[in-house]
Picture 1 (spheres, rainbow, N blue to C red):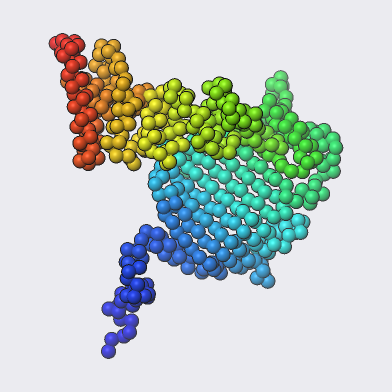
Picture 2: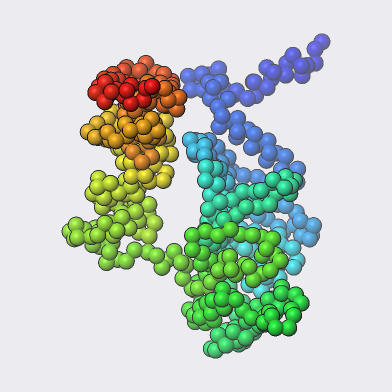
Length: 541
């Protein structure tokens, strides 16, 4: 007699368990549903949770996976980690919802890891004894965190990144740490096992908002630090600390080399910001901000900063304040009201661009795409590349065809980023539509006859028309110039024609049909120029 769980019966038994009710619900459920990518990933995550349960007790209400948006969600989570110091077993961590996000599935050029937790709480016994002292001083047995966010967003093409950590503790404080990087990666050319970080920082801000913690903390600080005249106390105490740090970093100093403890200009500026804004915080007890004051971006040399802490002040230029720098850059109400009212026509081009960008991006003013485009459209039509690129950005998802037209004009004006948007939009538009829009933008262009003076100038015209940088992209016009240069024997022009032919071929029969008309017009005009300007005599032997 065969055993009930002999190998021959394992597969049928598994599918019987995995497909409950399949035979009675075939009109609603198929094997493709059960083996969708979302379902496979969800089962993989569930396997990880089962493995995690060998280390901590854990339960949750629901798990959802959506790979289109790159999102995984856990709800009603409870954990009992049982740390060694919690002899009574009081440690419980709970949160209503945890969302883990990556980049959406269609954004292949971005790497993102974002964890967001809402409605979190944990017993103070979850903390080590030394850390538990802080919650004890605050009178907290249970720490409540309405919102916690960790976000790392990395752009592969430019190696730029935004990193942010936000946490809010009920009746304690809200802390927000944000850093924007122009470039982040590692240099392993000397030692791949221990690569050196390569970091160009644009700005960084640490914001601490008092939600009740100050009432406790101020009692632990030296009285001169929380009373009137605290600026003088800070000047002496913090200034002395910085001077001592400088003296230690300088090492042995020979006579006549100056005072090694003297503060640098940036250290003095930092000290001035503290003596100015700390008393203001003590007075209103609301917000304290530590932020960089970098012009552009700066290379952060960690080894140099470690050897000489003075370099940190030179590179990062830290300042203390009670107002974030981004808040001081908000649009004035008067300017915003003018832009939204009947007097918008009297605004200067610079003001239109400033307000239009704010309205389209939603930075410095509430987002209003329609109003922003109304302000920017006259500028874009007049050749302002920045305005055209902003409009293309706003319409990329809403109206790709119109966005493509504005991107063509932005590229014609030489705006950085326009060609990348053209490439991205073309991946979602039929080639026939692309050719039609290109013809509307470039159909009435006058071609420079002076470019016929040399093969190099002809090739340059073809290349600009192919890329869309410096001239509006037009495959028909690019083919016209490339035909002339190729006929004269230029191999680079031949490659440009080949690129266009491959684009058309890979776009399908409908694209070939649309291209046939465009190509015929380009060929006809190229022949007229070839014969009318007698280019064989100019470029021949």
